Image 1 (cartoon, helix red, strand yellow):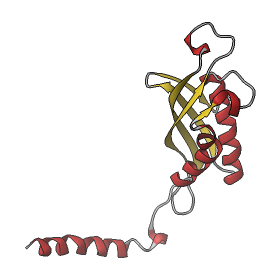
Image 2 (cartoon, helix red, strand yellow):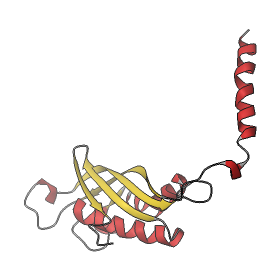
Image 3 (tube, one colour):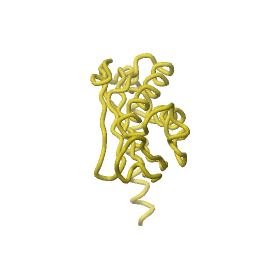
Length: 158
C-alpha cells in the first residue's frame, strides 16, 4: 500500500517538472536583489595601544555576514550562492581561519572595525572582477555572539 502512495505522489511531480521546461513562458524580473551568506572562522589577535584585556593575545570565533546585490539574469537568478561562498572563502575566510591576525592582515590594529573595512575592500574587488554587475552591500562581523560591527556600501563611500 505504501508503494502505491509513493507512486501516486511522485507522478504529479514528474508531470509538473515536464511542464516547467518551457522557460520562454516564465516571467522574469530584471531587478537588483540582495542575497546574504554567513561564514565563521577562528582566529587569534591582540590590540596595540589598548588599555584592557584585548591587549593580550586572545581568540574569537568570528561570524561574518555578507550581503551582495546583483541584477537578475535571463533565468531569474542573481549571483549564485555558491559563487559568493567561493569568493568570500578564497579572499577572506580561508586567509584568516586559524591564524594570528596581527601577522596575516596588512599592517593595522586588528580591531573588528579595521578588519571589516579590509574585508569589504577584498570582497568588493574580487566580486567586481568575477561579475561586474555584482556589488557588496553590507558586511556584519561578530567578534562575540553579542558584539558586532557593520559597514554598508554607503559608509564605504561607494
